[in-house]
Image (spheres, rainbow, N blue to C red):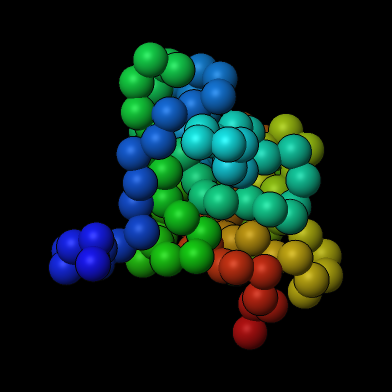
Amino acid sequence: MAGALTRDNAIFAMTGATDLSDKEGFAVKIVGATVALATADTGIFGVVLDGEATTGKSTIASMAGASGTVKVKLGDTVALGGNLKVHTDGKFRAHTTTLNVSAVAMEAGVVDDLIEAALTTGFTNV
């Protein structure tokens, strides 16, 4: 048995494949033993809460188990309650369908805003 300690919240300290020091709110994927900016709306591991250079550990909220809300970086204008999808630059954008929803906006915002959002694992906003 590896140990009895488990987490109440799926927040991880991980090394970035690139410098994540200015990437708060960007989506990331797993690349080997590191994380890198997500380049699609699939295979997303989580969101950068506190980014560091490759010599440090970035704080990452997992899509599959982070509780509460996180701040996400916007790639376009979104409305309160809108479905969000990760774009090829790792930013979150408004999404018009209920497929591959990565988050739900808890406030409205415009390009490059950090807004509060609830992470999902590809489910629809109901």
